[in-house]
Amino acid sequence: MWLLPSFRACLAWALLSLVLGMELSLQESFLLKALGLSTKPSPKAPVPVPPVLWRIFQKRKMLPSTNRDPVDACRVEEFNVPGNIIRVFADQGHFIHSRQPQRLLCLQKRLYFNLSVLEEDEHLTMAQLEVKFSHNSYHTSSQGQGFELRLYQTSQLPLREMPSQEPGRKLLVEQSFVQLHKSLLFNLSGAAKDWRTFSRNLGLILEISVSGRDGASALGSEGLQGLCTSINSFLDTSLLVVTLSQQCKASRRRRSARYPPVTPSNLCRPRRLYISFSDVGWENWIIAPQGYMANYCLGECPFPLTAELNSTNHAILQTMVHSLDPEGTPQPCCVPVRLSPISILYYDNNDNVVLRHYEDMVVDECGCR
Ligand SMILES: *[C@@H]1O[C@H](CO)[C@@H](O)[C@H](O)[C@H]1NC(C)=O
Ligand SMILES: *[C@@H]1O[C@H](CO)[C@@H](O)[C@H](O)[C@H]1NC(C)=O
Ligand SMILES: *[C@@H]1O[C@H](CO)[C@@H](O)[C@H](O)[C@H]1NC(C)=O
Image: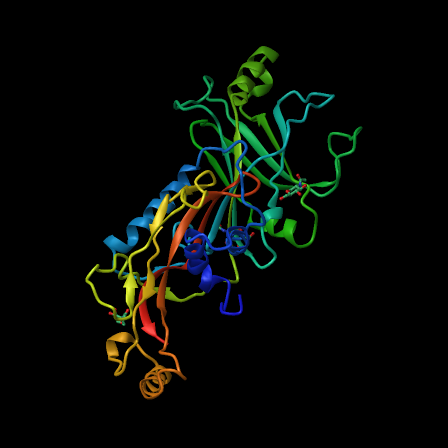
């Protein structure tokens, strides 16, 4: 490990060693740590990949070939926020069945998103709650009757015999809606930051009721029941969280030689290496890509070094000394001098879907150092 200047920089190297079968378990745990994981995930109930993550993943994959502009690895353009990790957390909360049903209340549900997988050094830049109804057809209730959604932040553990208006909750959002075919999106950045800093994450409470305004009082209990049923075909809630990890360098880079030429030469230059995730046994938790062109550096750094070998002054002097004293002083090494990032879509240890941008995964250029 003393050879390796930083975690990030040697990610590609560790992967390479993994492929070459070097001390598999040690290398693997080292690599997983660099990927932000404590153990190798083995998804139990993998959820479908949220379409928004697919879209972002595909777009990033297309960018280098269609667009010569720099790709900012540490920004999520789609949401216009800094970040290199996007996670979608599934809701782990349960429905609350109240002892004293309120007339207009269709449903009450606790929402819980376990953010404990976020590392300390990750800075949360966005959290967006999505509430989705399973209606795929355009639906407005027959009387044009609307609904009201209320979202509370819980600040006290629920007590068994709690009164319906318990004090330990704070209203975050109140919104009316009529249509059930569209997702409702809420900015929960503030609440999610609180969960990580000041208070424990005790979750949220979601309430949906029939709007009391438009003469709902005139509806009989059957009418109300019917309205609520359309809501009960509900419901999928998830929390999309964007974070920026400390490792992300704000540098902007352009990808170039993703496919190094195969011209024969024994001089230092990038060589083609395709790393397949199924070859390293990672295909069950890495969703995409299935592998990528990682490349590596190999070749001689002879005297006199030409400018093409991207040498440092030190390397030029070292080759001179080497040519005078081949036994005593080695040639400079052929090493990566420019690397570029890739995005990986995977399941973490809690079965959340994560899209993460990793720096320095592809060797673009080599040099004698
Ligand atoms: C959250 O997830 C962690 C593992 O990542 C687990 O140890 C912890 O018990 C979970 N918390 C809750 C409340 O489910
Ligand atoms: C979300 O809320 C935070 C404050 O809680 C605010 O700083 C941020 O600009 C909001 N984002 C959007 C997209 O409105
Ligand atoms: C040295 O850098 C140039 C551009 O900066 C690049 O075109 C060339 O391929 C590099 N040489 C090697 C051996 O990678």
